Length: 401
Image (cartoon, rainbow, N blue to C red; front, top):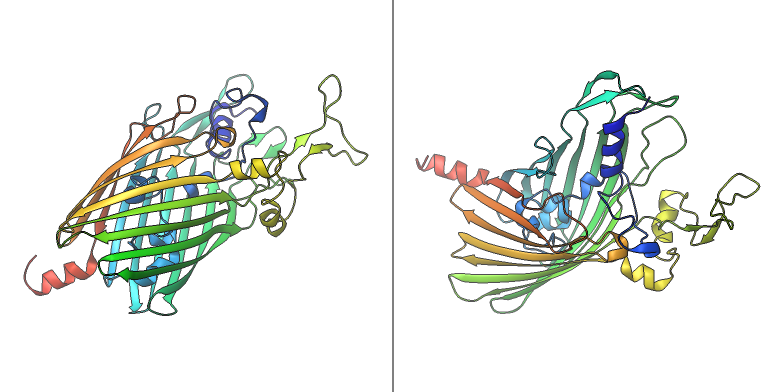
């Protein structure tokens, strides 16, 4: 049974969302692919408008996704936020990411948070090899996260998050003789955060988050299982309060996938693959990617076929800035960079924020900077709505609502 559209979506969304790049950069192209890349999409408009920085940005309600350790530094007692991101909106109207998150302070030194992420791939029509309709299906994926952050002292904190992942792309249809099934996995995040006011009205911070350390995922009953997008993120921030009305921040993040790099396989003079006595394809350069999760994490730092130069190319860079006026109006911008042989995602981001007594609104817009690779978020407006539960309660008691 051939699932034309379903398998096309499977390639797009389970192949690190890399489209039309196989001939763009010649033989040097060697992208790292993982399952469920939707969990790496920026869920909120604030970081989405700042080049996707988040390891050390000023703590906010979306800290669970970017760095759970920052939860301990949240000032308000509790909050709730909803975000919506259209996906591939230039091609189809019904693919989107929705994100709901909330947090609550346990005491002045700790807080917990939970989040639900839902990725809808719209409606598709399944057909067999003869083109006969087999029915329709609405592929979907979601995660449920819960996290905790705690201060160790006035400047330093640690955090942990747990994540359940569910991915149902084919609705149980058959591919050949194999019946597909939903993929499920569990993962954890481990993070730290440090901030310090080194001079009056000046602050610097550094944060680290190792995310999506978890079980492999499969969509059939065979032994083929794929890595989650395990990621190492480290970042820094500088913030300055110019005066009582104006402040700005500059943040930088570096990311690296903790997943084995695809090796270069040996071929004969006719370009046919060469297999060993066990039926495995022979590796010419690099290392075997079929390893355990822990082995894959350590292997990812030195298994690139191109050596140390290719390892450096696997780093992704983000830079973002944020300007606030009277702590009510924000203007944001950023840039994201990925090497041409590792995906070639390059784009600028812009955004704005409006903060009121109870509600806050954030908006984000993406502009592609690479002529060869178009982002699924190009020319798309994303938004987040934040609800300050503590301020709402106080206003209600004071008769302000």
